[in-house]
Every structure is written in C-alpha cells, then in structure tokens.
Amino acid sequence: MKPIIAITAGDTNGVGYEVIVKALLNGYVFEIMRPVIYGNAAVAKQHFHTLDEEFRNITWNMIDSPEQAKDGRLNLITCYTDNVPVQLGVPSADANKAAKASLERACRDLKAGKVQALVTAPLNKEALGCGHTEFLTEFFKGYRLQVTGDGEQVTGEGSLMMLCSGRLRVALVCNHVSIADIPAQITEERILQKLTLLNNSLKRDFGLEKPRIAVLALNPHAGDAGLLGKEEQEIIKPAIEKAKEQGIWAFGPYAADGFFGTEHYQQFDAVLAMYHDQGLIPFKTLDMTGVNYTAGLSIVRTSPDHGTGYDIAGKNQADERSMRNALFMAVDVLRQRAEYDELTANPLPFIERADSEGKPRREFIDFKTTTGGNRFDRPAVPTNGE
Image 1 (cartoon, rainbow, N blue to C red):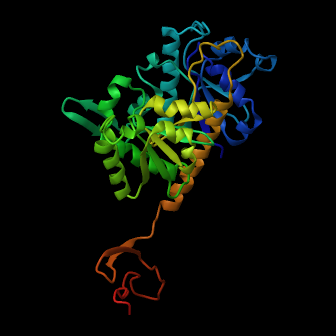
Image 2 (image 1 turned 90 degrees about the vertical axis):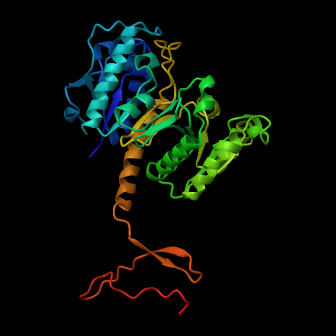
Image 3 (image 1 turned 90 degrees about the horizontal axis):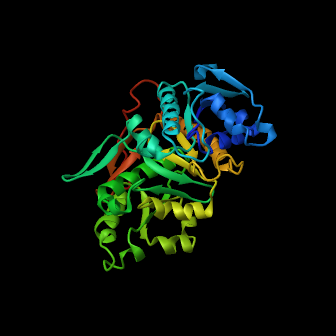
C-alpha cells in the first residue's frame, strides 16, 4: 500500500504552490505515494497562471479526508477560503493565517493516523511565532528546552533539526535562536541530548548501525585552549566524553572553518553544529537541494531547505528539486523506520557474566530447542577457561 503523504501549501504569497506542483509532476512521485495537498484550489490557480502552459490546466481531486485520496491524482483538501488575497512576493497577515490553517489541519490528520508523513512547504515564521521544528515539537509533544534563571528545564523526549543531502548531514544544538542568546543555550546537558537524538535517528531513520558524529566547536579555533572561550573545555568536551560512555561515536570539537574547508566532514555520517548559521551556511553552499528533517519525533516530517522565496515568487524561477527530495526522503524514512522497528522488535535477551578477570560482560542467551524443560535451564558458561 502506498503511503499517504500530507503536503502543506505554505505561504500563499511565496513559492510553495510552485515547487509542489513542479515536484509532483515527476512520474516517479506518484509511483511511491499518494500525495494530499492541504491548501486551496482557487489560490493555487493564481500561482499556476505564472508558470509554463503544462501547469495551467491542472485538475484536482477534491477530497474531504485523506482516506479519499486516489492514486496518480493531485488530491487536495481545502483548508481556507477562496478569497484569501494573493500578493505574490509580499508577506501578509492573510498569508500567515492561511499557512497556519494548512499546517494545523495536516498535523491533526497525521496525529490521527490518516496520513503517514508530513512534507511542509515554506512559511513565514510570523505565522507560527516560531519555526516549523519548534511548532511540531510542541504539537507532537517532543521535548522543549528552556533556559530560565534557575537553569534548564527539560521535559519530554526531544526533537532535532537536521539538514540532509547526498554529501552531508548537519544537525543543530540551537535552531532559530538569536546570536546573542546562543552562549546561554550551549550546555553540556543540551549537547548530550542532541547527540543522543542524532545517534538514534541515524540508526532508526537512516539505517546506520554505528554512526560517526563530528561535533563542532562554538568559538574560533575551538577556543585556542581557552584563550578565545572556555565552552570547548568546560562544556562541549565533557558532553562528548559522556556521549562516548553511552556508546555514541562522537568526536571533536572541531573548528568549523577548517573542518569544512578541508572537507573533513566526508569522514563522518553527520555533523552536530552549535548554532543555525554555523551549520547551514556550509551546508547550503555545498547543496541548495537538500532536505530539512525533524528528527526525534514519533512522526516523519521533511521540507525543502529553502524559505518562502518572496523575491522570485510568481516569476517561474523556483527550483523544485529540494521539494522533490523532501517527498522522496519522507517515504525513505518511513520504510527505513518500519524495517528497523521490525528487526529490533524482539531482541535476544542477554545475561551478564563475569570474564576470567572478574569483569562483567554481556552475553546473549542461547535459545537451544530441547525436548522438555525450560530453555533458560542450562549450565552456566565456564569463566575459568575450562
């Protein structure tokens, strides 16, 4: 059964509708999914008039619920009225309200299990008062990390903003945070939390058995032994050491300029950057067709790695490759998660024994089928070399 993928239309004055329809009219997309767009057909039509002839006479399959979606069709659920004013390239309160309505309806359907994954077109952060990642973390009850006068308060399980391409994966300790506020949010606990989320996601969502993670420094030259800042010595390195104690292959901290300049990132499965621009500037310099992935949540959400594109909205210049990659990646992660969950659903139990030096070790129980008797009733494994 093809998964049903919810696609939000994003900002009605941006490039969302353009990249969506361009990406979907790739025949391969319909072969692996049933897409459902959350938006408005009349509003979309105003966008399509600015595109090539092949996009101007699109026929929608108008539906009320994702269960009605049909294979090979552009399925659409109406989330706001036809009279939303379209002013291409101009941010507006009406566009923000429409974008939020689209996202909230899609999230409700995802939470109810009516769709299997979510792909979001770009919106203006004023629509939500935050970014997609923060909104989804709250909606799907991931953890929220707040810095208060009394220190950090951590609740829930967690989420992680990660940019992915064929060449590089970059995750962030701080997402959409003012530069002035970053130092207060770089804590040992937060870095360890993000490393754990990243390691788990690389295993479950990307099929990497023992991923290698590079951790970037906060300060220039990784602090130069404390001359340019002590965060590396007092916060980042201890977090890396604790992660290693938990079995996470984390390395660093690396000075960001040399790390990317020498292409050292090619030696790792993912990079954990301290803040937004530290990670995303090199990522987008290398590839503007990557995917923004929200890791750590129970649901699968992807999006293109670009913004609303006000400067090119209505000019038929938007590149749909990032949106198409986001669609493909959503399906890939769904499949990988299902495979991982099946393989790890019933792991072999283990027992702890002492080796010849008296040190504890874990050993899988031998499920030897015998006639009669309990399968756990067997002699202990000798520890003295006999």
